[in-house]
Amino acid sequence: MLYLFLHVNKHTVCLLLVSVALVSFLSVSCTYDPLSMRAVTVVIPMQHRWEVMQNKSFWYTLVWTEKGECKRQHINAGERRVNLWVRRGETVVFCAYPLGEFSPVGGALAADGGQEVLLNEQEGVLCHLLIESTKLTTGALGGLVYPHLLQEIRSKVDDFSLLDANRLQKDLVNGELRSSSIQVQEPLAVVISTIPQGYWVGERVRDTSFWSYWGNEGVALSLGAGLHCFWNKEDALLLRVFVDLKEQAFFPSVQRGPLW
Image (cartoon, rainbow, N blue to C red; front, side, top):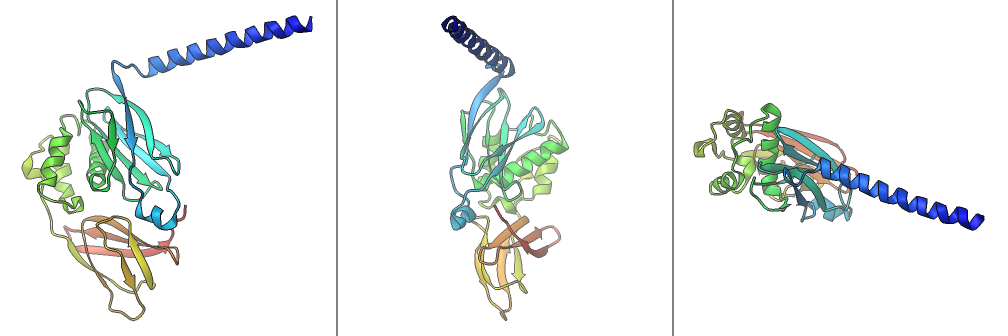
C-alpha cells in the first residue's frame, strides 16, 4: 500500500510540474509577443574607474524608454549583461547609472537595430538627455533616427558634455530636430580650492584626476556642463562640481562617500 501511495504521488508531482511549466510558458508568450517584442541584450563592457580602484563592482540602475515611458531595472553588483524584451519598430534608449545616481553609461538600439547594445561613457551624456526629454514629452523620440543623430554629434564634438543640452532638448521635444540643433559650447575654466588634500579621481575618463595639497592656490580644471564628481578614496570623500556653461558659473561641494 505504501508503494502504491508513493507511486501515485510521483505521477501527481510530474503532472503538476508539467502544468506549471505550461502555464509559465503561456504566460511568458502572452506577455512577450514575439511579433511585437524583440529580445535584446544590454552590456556594460567596461569597468568604472572607481570600481577598478576599489576592486569592487558597482550595482547599477538600468533605465530605458518604451512607448514614451521610462522603464527601470536593478542590476546587481558584478552583473555586466542584462536580457530584456523591448518593443519592435521603435528606438530604445538605455542608461545605466552607477549606484543609481552617478554619470551613466548609455547607448541605443534603432527601430531596425540589432539584438545587442554596448553601453559607453560618451553616449551616456546624450542618452540621459534623451531619457529626460521623454519625461517631458512622451513622443519626444517618436521620429528619432539615433545613428544619424549620434554621427552628427560626433562630427562636431568628442565630449558630449559640451553640447548645448537646452537647445538640443528644446528642438527634440518640439519635433524640430535638425543639424543646427547641435551647438557646441566652450568648457569652463574652473579653479578648485579649499578642499582636503589627497588624490581626487574623476568619475568620467575625460575628467582629469588631480592631487590637492594644503596651502596651494587651487587646482585648475576645464569642465563641460552638468555635474562632475571626483572621489578621494583615502578619506572616503566626494567632490561634486556642478557647471552651468550658460551662466559661466560652477558650484563645488564636498561630502562623504560614495560607499558600496
